[in-house]
Image (cartoon, rainbow, N blue to C red; front, side):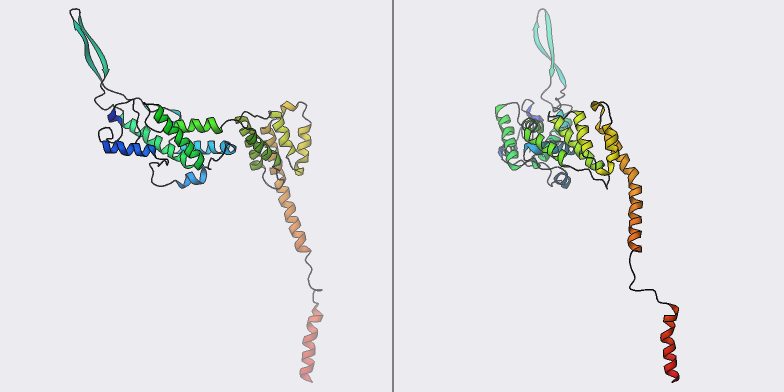
Length: 317
């Protein structure tokens, strides 16, 4: 797909679509297609495995950071936040008026020649195509069709726009699915409330999962007050950390409770308890081994000698 901006001269268009009618016709056909084809011929396995498919507003909070991080890793996020570079033309001096009072001149851009930053412009549009392709690949078919129709409508309504910009697609997705919704807030809160912090394993991952839910609710403008976050986290601590719970409950001011402090204390309590728990497990294993009973009393020396004596007597007889 060959993207360009119609507000710039025709030779800025990549390849020779400005002078070759066949190339220009193919470009129009590509824009009118309902299927966006990225420049890359092969799909990135990392994109498919790392970025989920955006299929509803409830998974926007999970989709957005993963898609953003992928575009950052590919060097494509800059086309979302920055506009394409303005052409840097060489200037020429022209005579605008000549009379008895003198000659008036004007310095204007020489648009008959390519700009000095033509390679930078081509590179930007190339990255834009790749970024848009990666975004479209991780959208539900219905959402992808809606976004594509929006991009085509933007081209039709604006004579100075003749390419599909990844930034327009991103702004639409963020405005449509990034709005705070009760269903998404309920999902995050329910996940945080249903999680149980284990008492026999490292609680770091489980605590981080709860805190991530609070962060997503804050991003959707449904923030849970910090002291309530701390109390919810304390209520999730296992019974093995009952001493820690009692210590936290002795805090005078509830607003002094911080989730980060509770997390650090919970991890420290588990690390202090894990060696003792490992020693207890070894002792229990030793008790189980010692409790194994043999199938009878151990044979005595005399009992072992009796059969041998009987065999000797029978041989002499």
